[in-house]
Amino acid sequence: MAMALLLALAALCAAPAWAQSAGDPTPLQFRDAAEEQRLHALALELRCVMCQNQSLADSNAPIAHDLRREVLKLMREGRSDAQIKDYLVERYGEFVLYKPDVEPATWLLWFGPGLLLLAGAAVVYRIVRRRAHGGAAAAGAHAAEDEQEW
Image 1 (cartoon, rainbow, N blue to C red):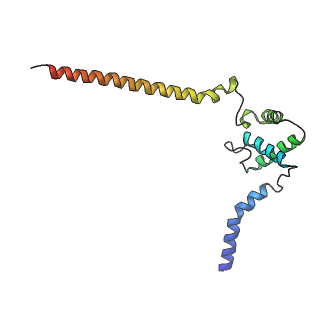
Image 2: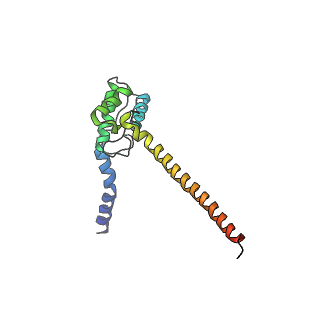
Image 3: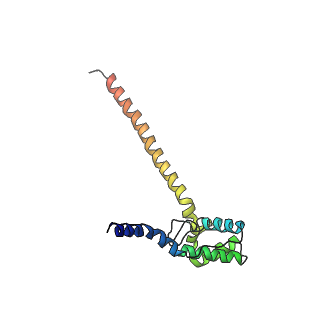
């Protein structure tokens, strides 16, 4: 009984590792280290379309495995990195790029955080300025009250 329970527990613990390896039954075979480095560099610049916040290099989703194979195939066809990115953008949209091009459609994405930071700094500046002027006026009023004789 104890042995059966131990075997069941071991099988349960091994299930995630087995499921992960089952999603990618054949690892990528590279011709040389340069090809592997190029694929890895490209995969870091591309976003997994399923995970959304992981790069293609970091994702274990089945579609990420398929996309890495597709990128390797395109590399072996002689396409440049820019051509591969263009192909994936045409297929999946600008979302697939971690660093989309700066163009009118992506201005908010690129410049929005800076604008929000500037707006926040302006609000803080106005609040501090208002308190500084209000505090000086209040101090002056208290001094004037102390000088009056009754």
